[in-house]
Amino acid sequence: MLAILFGLFLLLCNPVCGVFQKLYCSISDSCDCDFKPNIRDLEWDLYKNVYGQHLAQDIVSEEVAKFLQNKSPDRPLVLSFHGSSGTGKTLVSSMLGNHLYGSAMSSPYVHQFVPTLHFPSPQRVSEYREELKSWVQGNLTECARSIFIFDEMEKMPSGLIDVLEPFLGPSHAVFGTNYRKAIYIFISTTGEEVINKLAVENRQAGRDREEIRLADLQEAIAQLVYNNNTSGFFQSSIIQQKLITCFVPFLPLSRRHVERCVRSQLCQQGNCGRADVVEAVGGDMIYTPVQGQYFSSTGCKAVPAKINFFL
Ligand SMILES: Nc1ncnc2c1ncn2[C@@H]1O[C@H](COP(=O)(O)OP(=O)(O)OP(=O)(O)O)[C@@H](O)[C@H]1O
Ligand SMILES: [Mg+2]
Image 1 (spheres, rainbow, N blue to C red):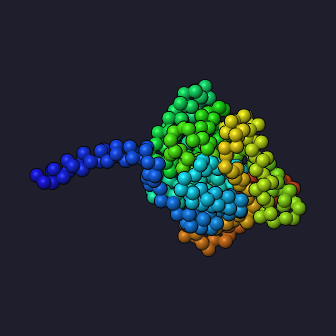
Image 2 (cartoon, rainbow, N blue to C red):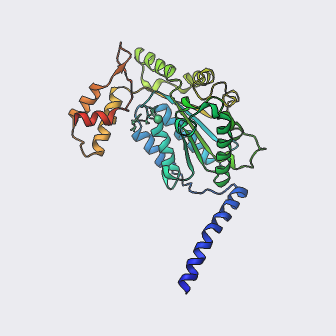
Image 3 (cartoon, protein in one colour):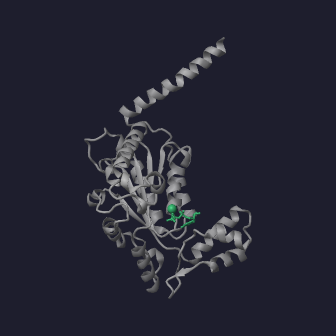
């Protein structure tokens, strides 16, 4: 009898607790849900497991640490990742989820959007705008410390992302205070030409990769995404009003970085000693430009397939 009563209590308590938690979160703004940030682990992961991306490593670790130190930020953290395919953009966004939430990327407070999946038809933009706005608003009410990741922004229908504008700015009038603790990550290949051009010029001049500075690329990427009608930010008020905290360039990877990717994956499979496979995969990539052959055209993306081939 006691057991039945206890079971009944648990059954009733769960939804009631849920309702109370939601209510508490919507008014208190200090409800941190599954948020268990470990900045040290994030930095360690970024510096140890992301190759050749000094700008992304520095910006992401600095901006995230600064943002989280501030108990009541006046605006959310908005980062926009840019660079060629296979250079680590999605990898770094996953590291954020992994080190900020108790249940990592599977946390209910990590929201990932892929346009081809979630917003496939450009004719339905107004419908998507409503859906996206209420999705973001609803989730911020539930958990202030939510993260929203928009991958493949270049496939985002034009005009859709601007619906987020009120959430990204420092306005104090909208939605209480909860929305200012969120993190937004936008990811796209837009800007790769300007990033890669600079990397090639830097290499031709015989300078170290680490000499490429963020200031050399920031404004150029902002201009590009604003003027490019397939960037997802075409003539966007988010860019006009400078609501992106930082544009994060991902540099093209050279052969030694590709070989580090190969070595790391081989080790994970228990094949650490296969220097022959590292050499074979490194040599089998296509490198650009034709003159110089500095950078892998697919970054580290094709590595697993090539390892399977040469192993
Ligand atoms: N800089 C890097 N350091 C370590 N591993 C990397 C790096 N770049 C890519 N990789 C590895 O290569 C694979 C593809 O990387 P990722 O998915 O992050 O690329 P991406 O930049 O998001 O490319 P795309 O634009 O095609 O989505 C992953 O397995 C990732 O671990
Ligand atoms: Mg990706």
